[in-house]
Image 1 (cartoon, rainbow, N blue to C red):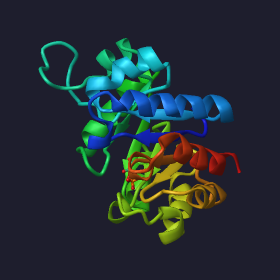
Image 2 (image 1 turned 135 degrees about the vertical axis):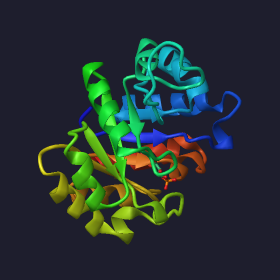
Image 3 (image 1 turned 180 degrees about the vertical axis):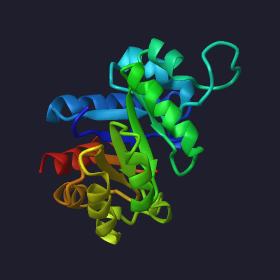
Length: 220
Ligand code: G3P
């Protein structure tokens, strides 16, 4: 994974009842047409199906710091990997974790050759997380998440400061409020290595048109 466009499905109603497969198929067609890395973060009930049927790279929205075996109801990395999942978001603003758990999970994903994408809310947290050397750190100011006001326009400095804070230890991607081509272009111009988006795609129609628009910003 080098320059991903990550679509976080969250648990939006729009992707319930089989629609997640339709969104995944739309993303697959755009990824093929534009030859860009689109990575999907569907909710757990449909992860394995999308990995198998749509053959798109899928990551977990969250994994638990629990052991493989008798850990009822938790999502553990080894199990996800065995069903074709290639990595996970960790410490998303909507599912925060203790830093000690983040550290253990980054190590565990590395050992499993799975991609770790750890979310941070500010550059100070980027410093702390970059010491763990995850593959990616996703900077997402919580106040802009779901707002439709793009981080790359509302707070470009948080992206550049995060890149400085991480140094060479981790690649920085950004998210929160991303909803059009220009938002993506700005983010990539600021040095972001990729994009994390949810409502800007999920709430749009038709999905293929919106994903194509954002993809064209990645190619800019
Ligand atoms: O994980 C991505 C997410 O938190 C950003 O949300 O809806 O602002 O694109 P949204």
